[in-house]
Image 1 (cartoon, rainbow, N blue to C red):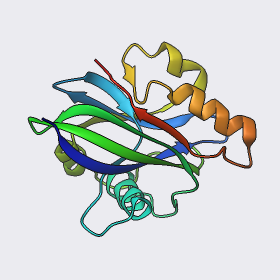
Image 2 (cartoon, one colour; image 1 turned 60 degrees about the vertical axis):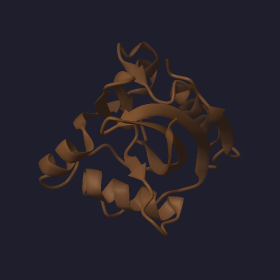
Image 3 (cartoon, rainbow, N blue to C red; image 1 turned 30 degrees about the vertical axis):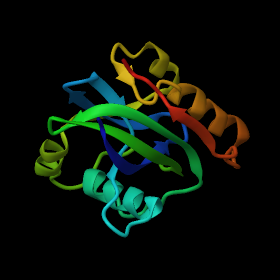
Length: 161
């Protein structure tokens, strides 16, 4: 049995179509790259959680969650506990920049190994897993419909193993 967990993330896209991702190592799914974000606190909306998590993980105070791009669910282990995480993923546009401040302790606590701006063309050839696996196509859809964002997409449960 997996523990259900609600989470929110922000897909940050730069003007040159690069996306900001964090690298994690999970005992169940292994090394992977995904967007900034994390679990909802009690009483938080997905938008509030996405904003808070982005601030905690990057130090950026000037980005708000834009439109909802997609929702999805997947399984992984969180602190040794099997979890089924359901996520709301929002879109934000920002120039390429480094995280602000000393985030070493916050990254260590969250299991973030490093960060990187990934050019869209490199995502499909990443030697490690990119989550969700559909991320390159989702970014392409955002870029194709700019300045609008496509209607939110429900990916459902995506098995990673």
